[in-house]
Image 1 (cartoon, one colour):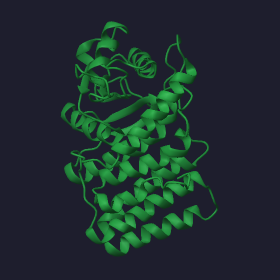
Image 2: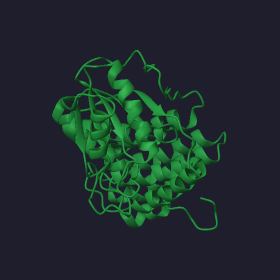
Image 3: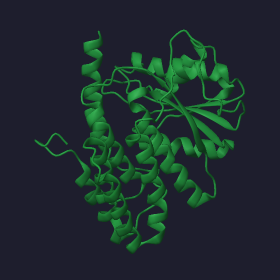
Image 4: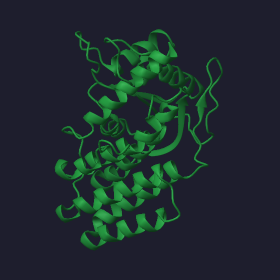
Length: 300
C-alpha cells in the first residue's frame, strides 16, 4: 500500500509541475518589464541554494537582488523579504516543522492565539477517483487536532476539483469540510472553503481573499511535512503583496504538519516547483518563467 501511495504521489508531483505556469487568476503584482529575467535569475539562484548548497549562496542572492534594485526599487522591496524568508525556510537547518502525532492532543506553538482572528489554513491534496486520498485525510486529522486545541479559531480549507477521474466534480475543500465536520466533529460554522485552487500558489491567493474578508490577522499553515516549506514561502509572498496592494496582511505564526514520507523526488523538485509558483504570484511573464521548468536530462 505504501509503495502504491509513493507512486501515486510521484504522478501528482509531476502533474503539479505541469500546472505551475498555467493561467493564474490570483495575481496581485506584476514585476517591472525590465526585471522579469532578473527575477527568474534570483529564483533560479534560490533553487540552486537549496539543491546544491554552497558558501557562495548568500552572495549570489544578494547580487541578484541588487540587479533587481537597479531596475526597480519597488520590485526590490517586494523580492528582498521573500528571498530572506526562502533562506530561513529552505536553507536554515534549524527551521522547525511541527508534526501531528496521530491519536495525541496537538502540541502547538504558544504563539498561536485562541481567537477568530487566527486561521488554520489547510492545504488540499489531489483527489483519487473523486475521493480523498489517505494523505488528505491525514492533513485534515492534523487540522482537527489543532482546531480542537484552539476552539475559537477558524479553519480555511483550500482545494479545487482535482484528479483525472472525478465525474461528479468533487472538490478537495468540499470533501475536507465534510470530513472535518462528519468524522472529526469540527463545528461547520468555523470552516470556510475555497473550491477553486488547483495548486499551492492558488491556495495562497484564494485563502488570502477569505482571510481578508474575515479579518484574520495570523495563521498556521497545515499540510504534509514535505510540503510545508513551499506553503510557508508562498503564503509569506502573498502576505507581502497584500500589504503592498491593500494595506492588509495576515502573519504566519506557526505550522502544523501531517508527517508522511515524501513522494519520489519530492525533496529535489519541491524548491523548483515553489520557485515556478512564486513566478506566477509575482506576475512574471510565462515566456520568462518557463526558464524555471525542469530541464530534461539534467535532473533539474
